Length: 544
Image (tube, rainbow, N blue to C red; front, side, top):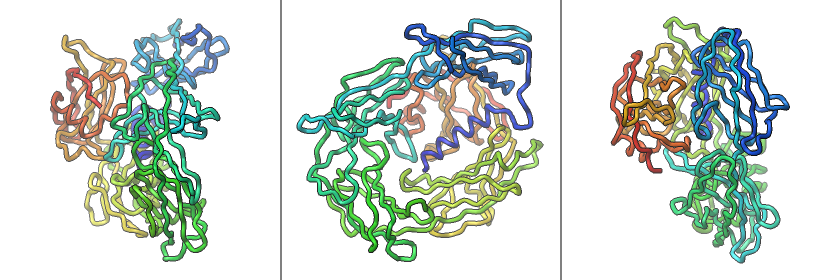
């Protein structure tokens, strides 16, 4: 899915910058860090908490688990400056010395042979939201999927996505959403329609707290660490159900007998996911009833076989009949990854990943792909047709970045993408990787000129035409233990804005957010291999 491509790509970039190369193991030393981890509530020792000692400059990240008394010891560390981080399921990740949950910690300097003691943590539990769901008559609604959702900007659209594990209401309509990190959430309740051609006379629209199908009218709920917010009750909104009927044929025009048609929520008050489905009959026909009005994606494929897939985005405001879904075979993209001769040692092919995404498609309708190249650098990816972006990264080192994506005729399509035909083959793609890159560093200062660490730094292109999905001309970071933020960017003209936002997950790449930020941003230019340092004034956070 395209949204997963964004997450994987960002994670890959972070991994590459923080992890040492495979042939350069982290150095050993004689220093030791000791401490204890307890629960903030009740001072109870926390066993099996994972504690990391991280020194990014030396590529050191060493972890241990606490014992039954909550104690830990990390030894054989080289002298240096360390950030100490603790994590445990159902607890909020903590950094030593932080002043707020999820805030930056205070680094510690450890000399050679030193034993640093009493590096202790008090960890807070994650938050929860609880309540009850009833129908229009006030009767408990069992089996309703309830989700804590957050707003994100994905593939050019503002969407609500799951911010924690969804839960189902019990027999008395009660729910509890647990494991929530501190932040602001929207609560959504969705009653999935019956499978197949339901004859229900009432359907229920996906409903957001306090009782609206419209995300604009929904109320945010702020959840603090360790807090359980109760009484978030919802009444489902009854609507007249609609029915979808049509036929599914394969790429040869034959009935796609035995395929399964899924109806998936595309946007609105419900998280993207299943709304209904049915199996295609021997003559290729299908019918699904009991659907609430809204935007959906239909996807039809054979169980366990994704070689042929039929998709369609539809808006339902009444019955939809005579719908034809035509399956298409996945297309093939073939190419080779090459490395420039700039001095750095090329990585092993097994450390490479090539990703293909469809930036203009909805996550439910796109067929993205990825591949690990062979030892000779060649790769083959099966993907859906349409405008496709090619990206590549390297696990285990931050030395290499994507430089160009060339078609067989030599055109660079790294930003424009390439058109992949239906059931076609695109060959001769060259993915060029380079170890030549720039280095952007900077500090953030407040009105008094003091350096600020607990803030977000957003850097984006001055040209608003580059404020598009999966753009390379956008980056977000936070200052490190030395109050310095680090970025690598394509050469160009940029704006940098810094602000305090404890929520940490805002849709900062949305054009309306960037438009707010540009009014108070610092303008600068950086070259392809330039090392540049900037000072960014702390401003007000955007409204979203």
